Structures are given as C-alpha cells and as structure tokens.
Length: 297
Image (cartoon, rainbow, N blue to C red; front, side):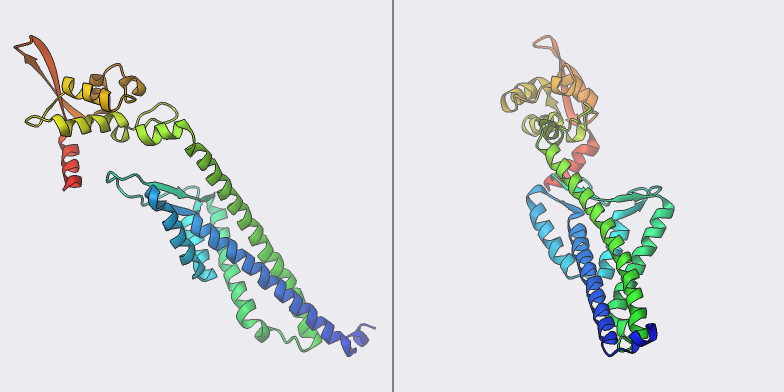
C-alpha cells in the first residue's frame, strides 16, 4: 500500500508542496530572527552626549539594516555575549568635561555556555546559507524520496531556528526591561543628584564630578590671585550664584571640609595682619590645573 501511495500521480506533488511550505516557514522565521537581531544590535550599545543620542541611534539602526546575518551574529557574540569570568573591557572615553551617557546590554554566560552558544550561532548562520543557497542542490524535490528527506530536514531546521528565535526574543525582552528601568531611574531626584552633583544613591560622592568641586573651580577662575583663591571670597559668591550647593549636601560641615574631603585642591593658610585673623587659600592641584588648562586651550 505504501509503495502504491508513492507511485500515485498526486503523491509527489503533495510532498513537494509540503516541502515548499516548510522551506517558506523556515525562511520566514529566519527573517524574523534577523529583524530582531538588527534591533538588538542597534539598540544594545548606544553612547554619546545627551543631545546626540537620538542621532547615534538612528545611525546605528541604518548601519545594522545593511549588515548580513553573519556579521550581525559576529557583533552579538563579540559585544553582547560575555563569559562570566571575563572582565567587561568597555572603551568609554576619558572624561573631557562633556556629559556622556552609555547604555550597553550584555548577557553573562559561564564558560561552557558561552562556547556552546557561540558555536550554535555559527551553525545557525551555516544553516541559513544552506537553506538559501544550497537547498535544491542537496535535495531532489522532484522525486518522492528527495521530498521526504527534505521534509524531515526542514522539520529539524525549523526547530533549530525557532529555538534561536525564542532565545533571542528573551534577550531582547530583558534589554527592553533594563532600558525601561534605567528610564524610570533617570526621572528621579536621585538620578539628578547623581548626574548634577556626583552623589550616588548610597550617599558616596564622586568628588571630581561633584557640583561642589565644580563651583569651587568656577570661583577659582574668577577670583584667583597669584595662583591662589581666598576661600572667604569664593564662598559668598557660591552662595549667591548656586544657593543649592551647600557643604551639608555632601556630608560636610563647611567649605573647608569640602576642599579637604574632595582631595582636588591644595590649601595654604596665611595670617591677615591687618584683620588679625587667619585666612584659607586654595587652588586646584597641579595635575588638575594642567588638565583644566588643556581643556580651555
């Protein structure tokens, strides 16, 4: 009975149609995977000044749309899949006085998972090339035996492709959730304090990036005399120009303590003979002053 079914005039045509349908299903799933991968690559590592982030993203979207699946998979494995025992060597720019943001999405895998995933992704690219370029060379779909072999191959291929797609979709969802969480944090007062004043949510202060140090340096440029700035001249100006910048905001009781805790300035104490009192002068440490001079030149 089975041999008679294979010899039926309609049987090869039905088998061929099944092969065509399953090949189309594989190719459609591959295209879904590629579209999702382009989006992840374009949005998974964005860096730049705040005013330029949208332009950076648009350029990366346009760039990713021109790349092949093989190139995209290479970017995915090199930039976004990291072994848990590897340090993240992000090449962020050294501070040059500009505000700089970076969003980077990565998936941490143990060494064996990383190797297995990298190998599986390479095999996915090979499978795509086989289906697109060599499928008819491999299977004779004009005969029943070739159709049946192709049918089984396509079933297995779809299972592989779909598994990769579901994994990638999970990573993309994780990236979207992380981005949403970051956007939520960026709308809080804690983020503003971190961004503007260098005060982390746990209360620690990034002194070089802090608003207090920035104010002291601004006053220094205005009131410097023979390389030094009188603190009693700087602090009234800071209070008038930046009333929200108080030493207490940074856990300090005075501007003298800010200068001491920040370690960004040198201090000189003198005695004002006319007024009969001591005076505190400060200046940016020489290394800092040198860097400031390079930036302004």
